[in-house]
Image 1 (cartoon, rainbow, N blue to C red):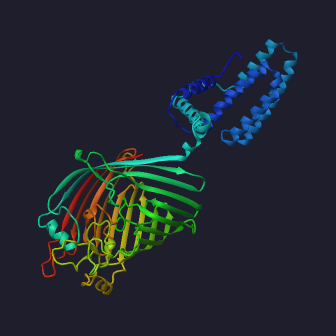
Image 2 (image 1 turned 90 degrees about the vertical axis):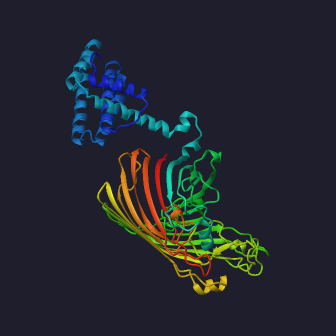
Image 3 (image 1 turned 60 degrees about the vertical axis):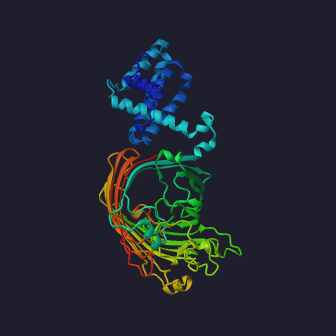
Length: 565
């Protein structure tokens, strides 16, 4: 051909440049198809001039391209029909001229026909060129990635792995107001093991997590995750920074398999994340659950869906023998709730749950006292502070120093949780959360009979009210939120070993406030500041005839730099 459209030259150059570049973006399928059509039509006309035997093949290609332009909305059906009809007429005219024309005249007539139908574009804006280039690269690279194993020689299983992780740097300041009881007195009165209740403490802490999730097949996934933190603490993965520690402790806090049996039914087993709709009033956010859980999520209609979760979770597996009369400790849970999405501006979620803890209460060793007595395994493996306790070796002679503290109460918690998400000012949301818990397992007569001591006063209720304003997440630059909450956890409302480890530095028998906020400083990077102020609800005595201790107060400031990947 003597003449080639400027658009064809531009497209060819940009396609070449696109494959040399390494960035993927853009989405304009219509522009790309139109450009490719012009290129192929130009090639078709050139072929017509040189190879008349390909006419039928090229005619079919052109017809297919026009149909594709119709599908993508570039041409209407009427215009496409007119274009194909005109092409048939032009082809017939060209054929008649070709009979009498020489090869040179044939080429000139084809050029003339092209010039007559050609729409020349003298200038293509840079943004259009860039868009065309990036779209072509995106389509090519998508194809390559989809067949990575075939094209690059990599194993097929690599495409089924998804890596995830996070890193958090924390500056923490723990404040103990004047008047707090000494650690010794507090521990005697509460059966606790605190090292500090009076001296302010400032420290830097880090939390690192790295995990992988594998798609085993269409219905089964599996995952593992490693994290920092003490191996004996189930609710805090934080590692205090100090050169003296030598190396950080790393443990496996996720190891699970999840089976998607039906779209509305899934079962997970192993060690996995919290399966309940809940707040940190009952469960610390970093707590892992061991056992098995099944979740049912039926859709009722377009606005209403339900969820039901049941599960069994071992807390402390104990091998029973003639010298160890304690059974293994378990928690059996069930929860039912609804998710109501009235419209795009209002979403509400409510649930009621029952958490039944088996064999967690202490049992006295009686006359067979000792640290390896028949009921010594009833002592909790992990505790913070707050729950009512008694010395299971109280029959031992004074001064024997073999105290072991078991829990006074049984625990069977009813938990009602609700959340309303108001998005009238989207992207700003107003999220209201309420949580209420009551331990219906507390029984004064049972406690007195089992412990041989007077039962503690009934303190079995817990509740939390929280309001958050801003974006639900702060994973992108400029996203923000602020929040405030009030908490009250009476002594025997929940197990102190599983509730939030930040408020009151963990435990129950506390009330107080939380305020804070988060701000996204870039993609997957955000800052969080929180202030906790908590006071003991009901101080205790070191001995029956001693006065009550002063209430323990703890104020905590946490500044976090968070990343996830």
